Image (tube, rainbow, N blue to C red; front, side, top):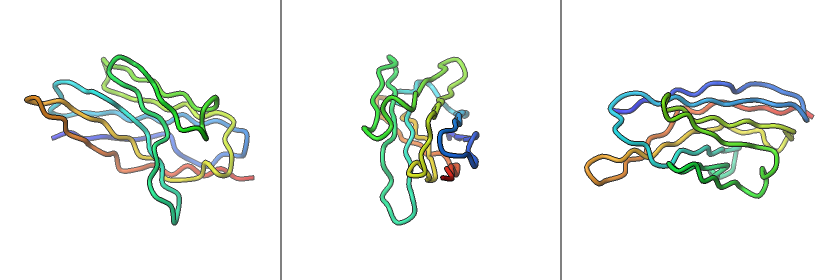
Length: 119
């Protein structure tokens, strides 16, 4: 089993910054991609940013230039630095990791952390 613990969400004014963390623990042999998704009320869950095992990154157009995803392999942790936050960034943010085991990939989700940006 794999557990993900997220932290770092909260309330911030527009233009402010937050840093989200997601630490994975448990039966982890190898982590492939790690990513952040978000879901606002009434909306579908959407990809925010993703980072591969070789640290290649990809971002949603709406956050490019403002958000930065990174990972610490030794700690099995993925981060999301969010700068210049906008009210439309308000959502529950979820981390997701894909773990390799016996040739298969298994996806795990965090419990979600609320990010609220006030105008």
